[in-house]
Each structure stands twice: as C-alpha cells, then as structure tokens.
Image (cartoon, rainbow, N blue to C red; front, side, top):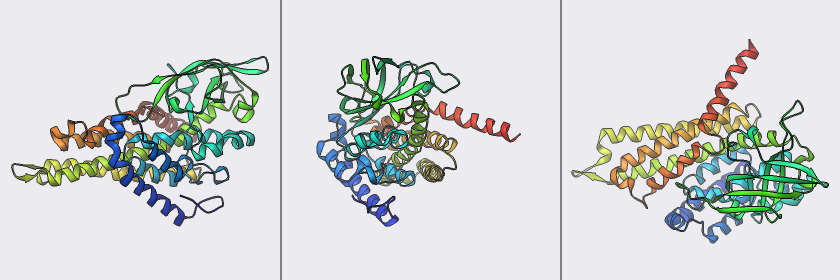
Length: 392
C-alpha cells in the first residue's frame, strides 16, 4: 500500500488501504489461523506481506516512511485486524503504537532519523518495556533504575510480559532516575538496542491464548547507554510519554476488541443458521435469537464508541476520559460476546480448532493490558469528580 506524498492521506487513499487490509486479513490470514495457533508463530510470508503493505508503519508519519494515518484511520484498520488471530496485529502493534508513538511524540530529530524509517519498514521491531512486577497499570511504581555512571546511563531492572521481546531490535525502556519530586515523576525513557551488553531476554511466555503473539521477561543488568539514548534529552519525559502512548493505545485496543467481537458474532450467526436441533435450525429458537441480538447490540455500540473516541483524540478534545471509556466498554463487551458465542455453539464451541473457542481465550487479555478495566474505571470516575470540583 502506498499513499501520496504530503502530510495526510486522502479519504480515497484511505478507502483503498482499508479495502486491501480487509482482503489481506480475510483471504490470507483467516485461512491460516489454525496453522498459526499450532505453530505459535505467524508465517514469514504473512509477515513479509504485511511489511510490503506498509502495516509495520501505518500510524507513523510519512516523512519517516510510514503511511501517516491518524487515530481515526487507525481504529478502522484495528477493527479489521481484530477479525482474525490477534497475533497478526501483535507483530506490528508496538511499532505503530505504544513504542513508535513515544518516538514520534517525544523523540529528538536525531532519534527519529536513526530509528523511525527502520521501524516503519519493519526492519526494526520496537518493544515497549514498561511493565514490571508491582508496576503494571501504574507506571509511577517503577523500580527499574537509570543512574549516571562514568558519563553514561546505567540501567538496572527487570521488565515482564513485554510484547515482541523475543524478536525485538529496540527496547523503549522506562526507568526511574530519581524519586518523584516537585520537578516531575523522575521517570525517563531510553532507547536501548537489543544487542546492548547486559540485555537478557527470557524464554517466551506460555499464555492462555493469543498464540503467535510472543511476550517475555527482559532483564537489564548494568546496561549502559549514552545521552543520545535518552528520549527527548530529558529525565522527566518518561511518565508523560507512557501515559500519552497508553491512552492512545487504549482506543486502538478498543477497536481491536470490536473487530474480534464482530468475528464471534459472524461465526455465531452462521452456525445458528445451519446447525439444527430436532430438525430445526437453532437460529429459529427465540433464546438463541436473543443471544445474537445482545451480541449485535454490543458490537454496534462498541463500533460507534471507538469511532467517537478516536475523533475526540484527533481533535484534541479528550485524550484522557474517552480512551478509557472506549477500552473499558469494548473489551468487556468483547468478553461477553465471546462467551455468548461459545454458548450459541454449545458443545461445539468448547472444541479446539473452532474459531469461537480461540476467540474466547484470546479476548481475555484485552481487559488486562494497556491498563486493566479497574484502572480505566479509576481514570473515568476520578476524572469526573475532579472536573466537578473544578467547576464548583
């Protein structure tokens, strides 16, 4: 996929990008879902085709080799990515999202020039190294440290559940440089090449679902990097960069959940129309129709919500509450829809190699990463109370 030179794609260009993405997902990836699950990896040919289409950099600026799509466009693509195994999106999700956006929003021109072209082309896999034991949804609790040693920064600490860590070329690492004080949170972010001495990546995690999407623990033991690795040349950018990237990512995850819920619904409707009980298609039974109706309602509500949240982000009207509302509702909705999909399928839905069984396991993670549902509720509720106090 290509787009014309300039600051943004035209709507005609985007419609073509979206159409090509939908065709790729449904005709190339969907037929190989079982193979991906059994091998726990996305085939090289699919990864290469995604690179050729520009999917490793679709949300990065055109000046750095990306397609230049904004979040309004992003959610439309994410709903297509969600229609198949979530390992597809995981391949390039951090490049476009939480890792790549740190560079786009906060990196120096030199840092962007060094890394973004490779990230956009898929030659560099960027990994977002934030989560630690005791510091998941709340980055303020970070224990990984970075201190000045002989004119360099020395990083010590352990990160876990790091997406794409086993294949990463670059780690975007968040570390505490000092205790939080009046000047800021004391959290910086560093660009650490994976081959830097002292970087140790553990074995792939064994997860409930999302086969083919690799995560692992990453240890930083006496890792030294220069000042050119400090994002934005500031020790206090880290917390703000993390919060901004995560908030944007929440809208993307919400859209991904909508796409997955749509797939579960489509599988359920097709099954209800063809499977019979006592010679009657089960779709004729009112209780089955009621489940399908609830699924359809959730999917449509979620789709409208993510589109609205993306619009509010792009216009800069709401970059805090709306992303949390979208992620909370859509990921919880996807879990409900997946559960209903298994119920519609009956015993068949509990069998491996049936799409809704995989979806049931895959969507459970959506309520956990990039901020749990509980964290989203705190952000939403706390924001409403603070706004009321300010207006009062």
